[in-house]
Amino acid sequence: MKKSEIFSQILSDVSAEAEIDSDRILSDSRVEEVVDARYLVIFLLLANGFYPVMIAERMNMSQRAVRSAISSFESRLANAVGLRLVFERMSKKWLT
Image (cartoon, rainbow, N blue to C red; front, side):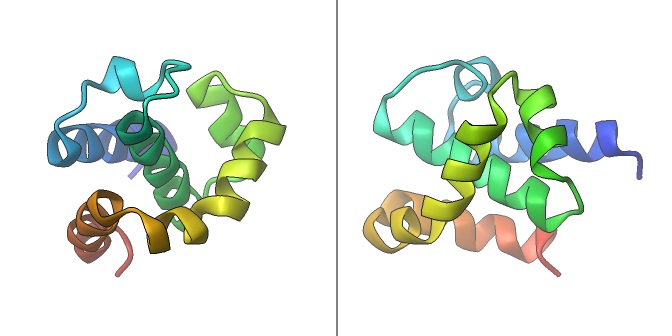
């Protein structure tokens, strides 16, 4: 699968599972559920071979913001039940 296909599919899957529109995930919204979905997309992309610079380009974010999301993902996962539930469902498909 090509990188562009992986990106589109992960974004689509997280969007469907979290019930948040893809455009909102890619926006600069600071609503907790949107940020959780955005962090999950970043984490799954990283786990599927994307470098932070590639993620930043595709998500229209700075590399610093992407690296921050990566470093704080585990903490968010431990503290957000909704994120944890979506993560568990997504990990079956994307982290095998």
